[in-house]
Every structure is written in C-alpha cells, then in structure tokens.
Image (cartoon, rainbow, N blue to C red; front, top):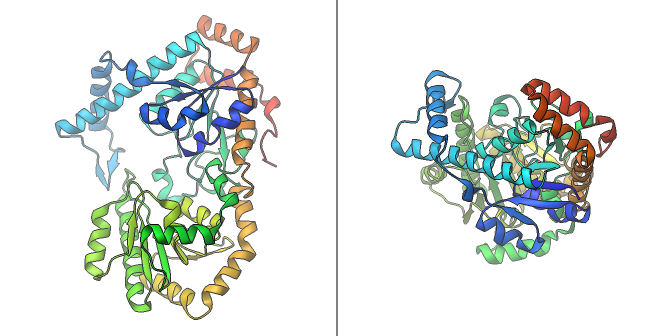
Length: 444
C-alpha cells in the first residue's frame, strides 16, 4: 500500500477520498482544525506542533537576519525588507520553529513508515519548502496540486504564490494555465487534469444558489447586482504598490458607475486584501456596497447579475463555471466567454454601462453560452466533476512507481553514497522511471 503525505487545503483535500479508493494510505499534515474537518475521511494525521523544539532555531533565525541585511532582493512595496521590531522576529522564529518541527515529524514518520509520495498545495511557505526539501533529499517524489491557476505573468510573476518549481511533478487546471508557468517542467512530469477544487461546480444550480445567497446576504435584487472580486497586493516585491493602485482604481470605477447607473455592489475581498484600501475608496466616492465578505466566495458570485473581477484570478474561472457573465480587469485578453478591459476608470465604467444597458445583459449571457465550453476546456479541461479522480490517478501512479523493492534499493544508495543535491536530483528523476509515467494525465 503506497503511503502518501498531504498538506491540507482545498485542492488537496478534494483528492483524499479518491486516493484512498486507489489503495493509498493518506497521512495529513495538520492541526486540530484540520483533524476536525477531515476526520470523516478516516486518514492518519501527523501533528508537527508536537515536534517543535528550540534546537537549531536560534542559529537559523540569525542566518536569515544576516541574509535580509545583505540581500536587496527581499523587498516589500519597493523597499528592502527589514524586520525591525521584536514582534517581527518572534513571528520569524515561530515560522522557522514550525519548519524544524515538521522536518522532525516527517523524519520520524519516514523512518517508521517509508513515504512513497509527498503532495503539497503550494511551494512558498516555510513548512512546505522544508517538506519538499526533505522529500528530495530522501528520494521521495513530490507532487504539486496548485490552488492557483498559473495565470500571472510579467508584473505578477514574482507575486505568484505557486511559482516556485520545487516539486518533482505538477498538475495544471488546463492548457491555458501554462501561460504563467515560470519554469515549465518536462511534459512527462506535467499533467493537465482540471482543478479538484472546482469539481463542485459540475452540479451547480445558479438560479437556486442565487436565491439562497440573496436571502442570506440581505440583497433585494430589485436593482441589478454587480459583484466586484478584489485581488490582493500582498506580494513582497517592487511592483506591489502598482498592483494596489490598480485595485483601488478599479474599485473606485465600479462604485462610481453604481451611482450613475443605479446598480447594487457586492464586494468580495481576497483573504489578504487591505480593508483600509476599500474603506478609503468607499468614503471618497460616497457610496458603499450592499454587502462585503472576505470568506463567502460562492455566495458573492452567485448573488450577482454581473461579475467584475480584478486581475487574472481563479475567480474568473469559477464565475464562468457557475454560468455568470464576467468582466475581467487586466487579464484573460482574447479569452472566449469573458469581457476583458484595462484597469482604466473610463474603460471600466463604459464596459459596465454597455453591459447593463437595455437587453445587453441578455446578449452578454448569450456570448457566455457560446464561448463557455471552449473557455472551460482551456482553463479546467471539463466541468465534469472528475478532476479529483484524474489527479488521484496521477498521484497513485507516481506513488506506485516508487513503492516496493526499487525504493528500498534507492534508499540504501542514498545512505551509502551521501550524494550531492544536484546528483541526487538527477539520479532521482532517472531512477523514478519517467517512461512509466508518459501520458499519465490528459496531456496531449
């Protein structure tokens, strides 16, 4: 039975059941909240917090401090990143401590029950980087199932939390998501499967969900409802301020248009969005949304007659999967089914006026219907609810290719030769038997 270690999040949680159906034993790296949520799956749990200790943390934090002081590449909103206050260093020490604790926990687990695959949902947090580094050093293959759709490029490249290619294997939602891959892996290490997180939309009833959302959010629906999905300028690099300014400009244009055209606004904040930015714009324009939420994404989209999304976000794909007409600000240029505009106030207001004039919204919905199938094929393979099964098939094949006698021989070789990191990487990829995995996804 292959042993698969998973970090919990929406896309990875969705494949736990299918992995178990494929005969894998799933171990989840989690805390008490994850345990309560995933307990019905009957999977094993690894709690890294119980392994946290002070050994080595002080030296690691000191090393990071020196690097921050010497390396100007670490920036936040155009300025070199400096951790000055005691609270900043406490946060850093806690982060390093958790990474150390996770490494200890996984080392003990691997010594007792050798792992055949590590599955992560992102490759930027200290914990996941430590987990992937451990996997690579011990010859355990790793698979990245991104939450994000790899839609960023240019300005957003270094802002993408899924843009660090540390894992050996990668799944993608669709061919259109290749656009933002900074370092695409070899095609036989890449599978286009659809996003498991989006499987729920295969049975989505928009009319029913809209009625429920309006009742729950207190939106009357007497006037047209436009949902604005905000992005977040949380990225730590020089262009962060430019992204923040674009969000501010877009939100201002939507609120101004609501006053002029007479529609209600629902604002969905990104979990990392700045409340102060949105408050400032609302005070400046003199109007506020009828509802604002940071967590209830599905309701914020379903409640609307028209969705406006800032940036090349997952929200665009989800809105189209739900069947909502969508205007995209700065993203998806040339894509079917959506209307793309620049982050220019006049352009946004003009697009809203045109979309909501007379029977234009009906025409917009017809345009959505015409291009929806092609859009879904490009960005999510299909809206068939089977992405989790496709990903589980990929993961089980990778895990199965490393289980058994071959992995025992490889483990002994690592212990005997103590290879360099580069040699280990090359040897692992070669010994893993890429030929066995050619065509394992929907890649053509």
